[in-house]
Length: 229
Image (cartoon, rainbow, N blue to C red; front, side, top):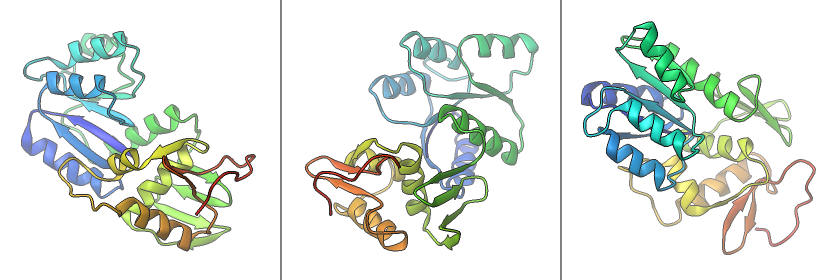
């Protein structure tokens, strides 16, 4: 899952990024509200935004209001030192999906992110089951037909994206943005390699190639039609 962290404290941002990266999140960081709003308005695909309120150039509350004013539905977790009840009410009324007060426990941040992602995907628990594959985001475990499957961090993230959106055709660029941050180099054939590994570790027909576009994991009721590889 891809997270946009908007936080102007470099030390805190670095700590959160490292903590979430170990949990299979891809985390991109911005330090001011204006850059974050421009990035989100440009249609960058993020699964959730972690938003500080005390930001330079454009404060977090204004960013949130403008984001919702454009009907952008991306889940937003407000992360702030403002602990007054009025602050929390204003944040939630402005469109925040959750509110976490600094200082906080990293374990709670992770749990709140999992809850936000479940709600945004219409899930009631942390596990996804499609085509005999079970992926548990909370436990970081994958199994196929009851047998455990060992995946790398990026393979896990890629599989989670496919399982969360069966039937959606992903371009290679979109998939690259999901599993690689802005500061990471991406080999030209990286997505093909990861997809090959998932097919090998699970089953060959898991992910269908849509020629000239990208890849799709078919819905359970769909028949795999069209060109495959």
